[in-house]
Image (cartoon, rainbow, N blue to C red; front, side):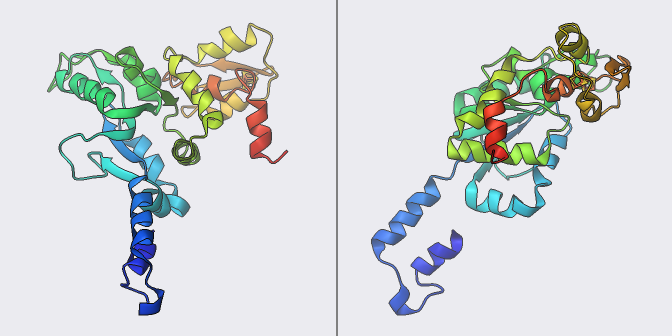
Length: 263
Ligand code: SF4
Ligand code: SF4
């Protein structure tokens, strides 16, 4: 897009190729319509935004041509939170940290869409085990998913979410692809995640087909398959929720999957 603007301004074009004032204004208008995206870092490890940057093949285009990064401690040198179309919130929120709570409230006021970005924001993940008592803030003991405090529009759980799903979600937001976003909007209510969901909601309901997807998806190797059924080692479970989300018997958006596969 920058190249097109330069061309329209005559910076790289021959005089006869210079575009009209209307064309310049049209491109400038297009430029303005890039979604303004902010990244808000609460009690997270930065792994989710690292995963975003691992979209090596499309990252440059995504960050320069398709979106405008307007806020984010690790992505932009901006101190005041501006208005945003989309806010990616990483990390859970500490109830004893007034600054984090105010920041979260401000995000809700200033962002059109708020996304719980990664499992800490979406389900609390391993911050569910925080008990406080550590220096330099021993009183910081309670961490909750952001949907416990504000209305969240969309959740991308994962510890971290895969680079591909992050990129596809951002592109779906840009294109207004509600069909793609709907399952993530439905996941907003899934804040009490646990490996035991497999037993309670899949195995106990006679839904398990023994495919092993849950074991493959678990980042902490907490799941082993025993006699064709998942067995969760609770000592290793960090409550990210990915095993249940990835399980093909928890939900299966057949129409969308067929569309993506060209069927
Ligand atoms: S069993 Fe593994 S994938 Fe499932 S919630 Fe626990 S840590 Fe996450
Ligand atoms: S992913 Fe679901 S269906 Fe497959 S083994 Fe695990 S619980 Fe069973």
